Length: 372
Image (cartoon, rainbow, N blue to C red):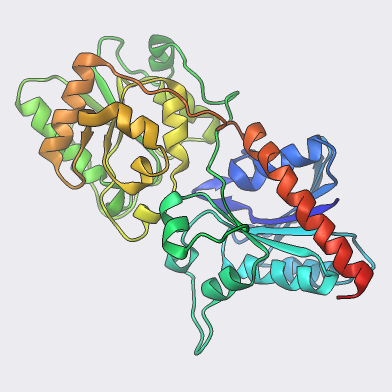
């Protein structure tokens, strides 16, 4: 069995290659280390430099769109004599999916579409008259992987070829750390009471609700500071002395910043996009073993149902700063953490998919032998 994994190099504000980040890196890396011949082809929308390297047994190529090398590589991959490929996995957006499907058809391989997000909500997504790329790929994939249970249920579960494959966690990176040692790294006073949020800050993430909630707590006499880090959007000006914005931190600094906090928050609002998503930060938060104050949205409650049930009243209504303030105050008083779900390490997730890959590889080999 041989696998070609095509993924987007820069996604969720991280570099899959440099940071060894997320499903686009972790799944093919673990397959390769387990002995499955695997190549990772990264499509780079942001830089102009091609990269070729090995990481253990994983063969990696990153090609930029800006210098057209991605299109040259696409043509090369379409040549049956150049590479033996049994399974093509495409992840990142619909344009990568269309390339992957064409390669799979040309090589008579099996095509697996990794739907880690609702791609037709992306800013660069385009529908053509009579052609919806997202729906086309969903219909024509031999298998579909979903990171979000809500999205999987909305699209419709297939009897055999739809699989829930959550966003996992690198436990060597995200694990409990000493709060006071971590605070020293960011000059945060040891005696502060800190509530934190880490990640993108688009309006539907509810960061403004979180700011309002902490303001409510302070007005009621609770001396609480807010620690924020991540990609900032819009014109938000956080001039309050109790807000510490750490910037868009490098990936290797994020766990240390999370460990500075007494409570970690997920203040998401309801939105068509976020309700169908599966945020990587949730498993990261849980792995840090800090108390959580979260809003009750499908992004959390459907992807982590046992943890949602455990939190109960420690969850808040989405878009309700006063209720979020209540949940945070409750956590500061009682410090309830939740357990990590079973099987959320990337090694476990990648391992569970091997059997499915082998089935698709066998089907591809049969089709080639019978010239179907």
